Image 1 (cartoon, one colour):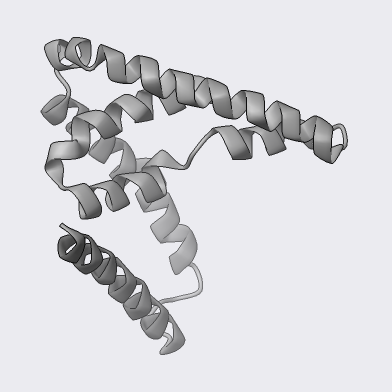
Image 2 (tube, rainbow, N blue to C red):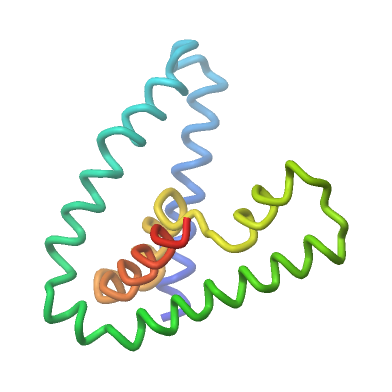
Length: 140
């Protein structure tokens, strides 16, 4: 299991390195970062989430994962309490408190979480990931 996890993370690091090298060699135009970002954000990720929900999360599975939903909602609630306490302890100025709390309480489940979850734990973990994604989306 550890070897598979390391191998999956290594593949991601190699893809990042390849992108960096190709960018340095000017393989991509000036507008490439904007174009690829829009492609991923507007088309690829919504399609991926939609197909994952249809494939891995049925109504009966969602009901069977009800306790997981309670645990994930509880963990998000705890992080909100911790974040609010940190706002007071660290004396975060007004106008930045909401961003500070959101940064602590809500994770980037799609851009980083989905590919990393699949790489580390495989397809079997998708129902649990989707339960957390639903919780994270509702809390945002």
